[in-house]
Image 1 (cartoon, rainbow, N blue to C red):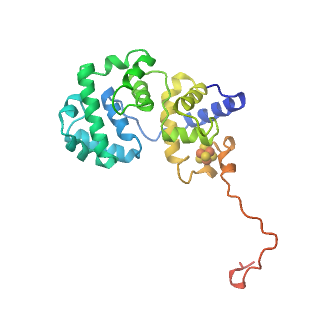
Image 2: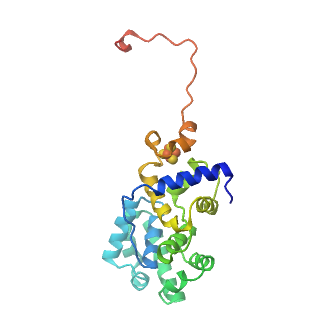
Length: 243
Ligand code: SF4
């Protein structure tokens, strides 16, 4: 997608402000399989629950294709319970691990080092791997020039009206990639997530203190429309404020 000129300037300014904010957490550097499992666990859950579930999985079974493909589904489910949807997710994780052993000899490194479109397409043939999970693995583990979009990033981009409300994953990704330099994609991805968790939250976004307030139509749009009362009732004496 091509951003219209007006939106492009606003998008560039918004991204530049978010990217220049300090980072308050450190993303982990892991092998592609661990990133893949962590990202599958992060789908539709909070990062605290994902972190707890991943820690328990690592501690009780071990996050390797061999260990997860041979573990009992019920043991995986027990370990990842904090992430929610554990019965379904445990089956997905076991199937993905088994697939990686069978098709890729247990090693994702040669896959992620292929050119981006091919690597992404191949990763997306694995159970539980969609566009975001594939892009996260390719950005973090292979340094591919892609800016993955999670739910926080989608929300921010739509509130800023850089894309239509109906925009799908690749449209949002394309708009954001257009508004920043490829060597800043990793930084932009991490800091947009941080911004979504801390400021542009799903519920009660902190618009009044937000650094993007002057660029963002959302606070004006979200103002409640109050009914107009032509002849207000006189306030009872007991509710009057002292003057
Ligand atoms: S002004 Fe509000 S809606 Fe807009 S980016 Fe900031 S927190 Fe999000």
